[in-house]
Length: 168
Image 1 (cartoon, rainbow, N blue to C red):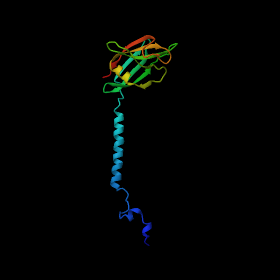
Image 2 (cartoon, rainbow, N blue to C red; image 1 turned 180 degrees about the vertical axis):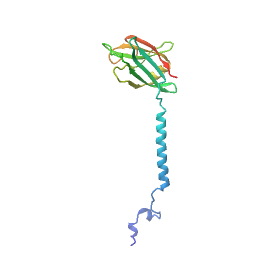
Image 3 (tube, rainbow, N blue to C red; image 1 turned 90 degrees about the vertical axis):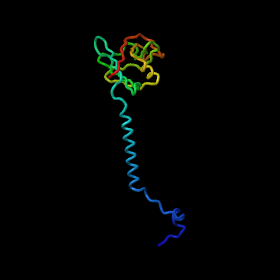
Image 4 (cartoon, rainbow, N blue to C red; image 1 turned 135 degrees about the vertical axis):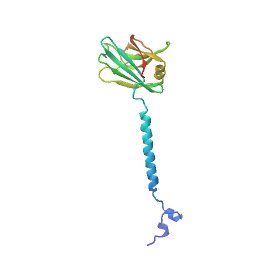
C-alpha cells in the first residue's frame, strides 16, 4: 500500500532520503574520544603534588606540637596542611595563629589558626598567602584572640619562630 503524498514525511517530500543513525564507527570514535578526555583529566588532577614542597616542625622541649606542610606546583604554594602533635593544646584564652615571615623584613602574612586534637587541618592559600610563602624562610606562631588576629597583622604575643625548609 502506498501512502498518499500528503502523509509522506517532509524529507521524503523534498526529495531527501530519510535520516540514518550514525555509523557504528563514528559512535565508537566518539566514545573513545570521551574516554581519552577523561583520562587526560585524571592525569592532570594527579599532577598535583602529593608530597610537601616545604615543611616546618613546631615543637617544645616536651615534644611535637605541630607539623606544617606546604604543597604546591612549580614553586608556588597552593595549600597548607597542619598536623597537630601530641602536645598541641589550646591556650586558656584565644587561639594560636600561623604567620609567614618574609625574608629581609616586611609584614607577616596570616596563614591560619592552628588546629588541636587528632585530625590534621588543610586549607587552600589565597594569592596574598602564596606570594608571602614564596618570600618566606620562617614561620611564626602567635597567641591571638579566638578565631585569629582581628587585623591583618599579628596582635598577640609571638610564641614560636621556626624555619620553613624545602623538601628535597
